[in-house]
Image (cartoon, rainbow, N blue to C red; front, side, top):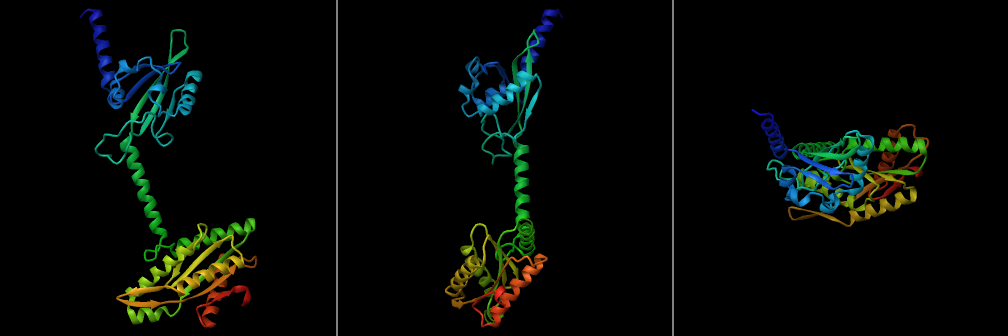
Length: 320
């Protein structure tokens, strides 16, 4: 085979590979004008190479983050080193639609990219080549796994019946708040309450009604909370709330609002109206609490003082 024919075959093969390879290949000059545009880019953009050649990249694709792209490219032009980007940093460069059937839930193609310096005969970087990889499957799978793990973590921290924080998570949050206040000072109040005569509800109406009563109380508690407050089911019919940045006055206001809301509400179960009240105790943080457990004990003592005083009332630990 003559050398000329062999070279022509090589060029033909290279062009064939260039246009059929399953990655995007774009060559840009120093002014970010498109010089080369392969079949992958044509297929996903719907633009022919002839339509994009010598056109400004950012005019062709206004959705590109120009500031970010220029910053990434300039380092390649100046330092003459390759640069990489992954979808976690920048989900995509070109906003192409996702056509993969397996990961149909993704609206767009997630992309990794490599920026390669291309030197001229003088050793100057006159162009860069951007290689684009479709990593939609990998990205979607990772995001789905992260979402599953997030839900599992949330489930491990949530009381299944009331959807409040469970005791383990709530108590760990209180411990962290206790340590923070110990280090930095501040104010915080721990409030605890339980449903009066809850055993009677279970005995007269059954445990299904008792569960409905607990859900009802949890819903009312959520309506009373501020965004910064942290509520949990402490156990049985007992609940606890960490009132961040709340002193005695704030805690008293919160407690009365909650007590009144519960007293004036009803649970309806099997056609019967059931009224409930709660007994509440609270303890503001005090330097004398050596451990966070002592804080819980203080609020719990205030709660049981409310029960001893006739129930459906509020007690401040400082008044014991």
